[in-house]
Image 1 (cartoon, rainbow, N blue to C red):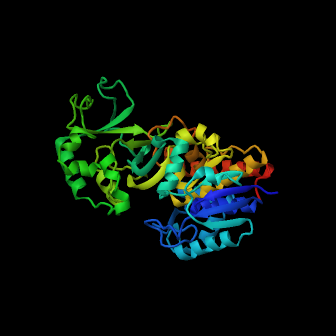
Image 2: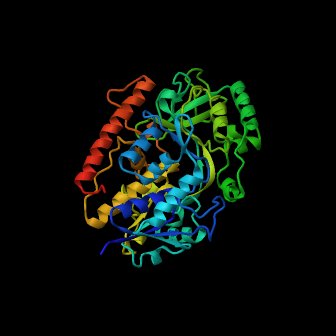
Image 3: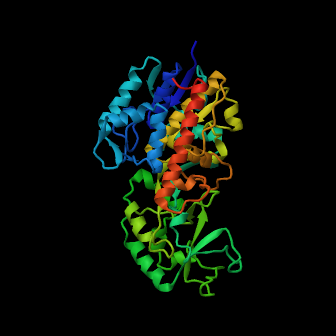
Length: 454
């Protein structure tokens, strides 16, 4: 008798996981609440419906997004294959006809003999355990209130977030270190510290605030604003309350001394290392609702960030996700005492697990499908190399040392540094790609030897 896995959510992650498990002979019960219980952004009950852009980002083989697509193709992702079947012209990106893509995935899911689709709302996780050998939660950023409440019982109320409030992250090698200085507050200048500081003169600050206030913002829907701004004010909203307000908050210069002048700057932005390698830095306290082009334009007015390359732009929107570094292992399996008593393992995939991006959600679903297959068969799951882009993201997202976690997409800022270092950016990205492709080939071979490839 085959095993049965219950998957909640027929989005990108859930559909990918269902098709992968079914291709390995595992029966799937796929629970999807749409269309009977619609969300604020979905328009259909189809699987893998894209609700924002129809672009799956770059296909360049020496980009993080391109390498992620290579991972998916190499490991036989049915969704990336569907995306390629329904691709539309988009230059160097993979964009799809969203209707045809979703219909294709829906057909695959509904016609597979080992997948049973149940059109209902899943409200109670323990009840899903009946008749299941494993549970996969892939209900996405708009997880229903009832299911969120049930998940909180397994994770703790403080381990579940309901919105993104992520500040931008910039690549370290794009920072002008001749203008920023390293110092923690109240340390002696030149003593080092945990933060980089970008000091403003009064003139630079005034010009920055003027453009910050004039910049175009994302027009948020009601579901994106109900809880968002009470908990975490965007930097532009702080400035709107008073032009000097950021100087007494996020941009306060207190306790800092600019070694170039020997004086306290008029204002200062602090940047904190986003990863253990110091390859990328977070703009501390710069949660923002500006559009991505405006973030690039305005935040490059910050001294030292004139040529900043953004590993992640700031986002503020409705997004249910768990505190992955404290709740998930490298299999994306929930590890809490409350989950243990269910009697079946619970895995989390897609945006609910704290990944950001379409292809990241697909890859997360594929990763969980491999983990579930291995666990049910009692097979050792080969370790996903951190030299691959998703392996680097997974290591970051499940590392207990990762603090104040916010959803992240794949980027080179999460990759381990090259040895020896490569200074030229184009050559460096190609070196990352070469290393990732070699690691991926070895990983695929290990999966084949373990019998985990269909």
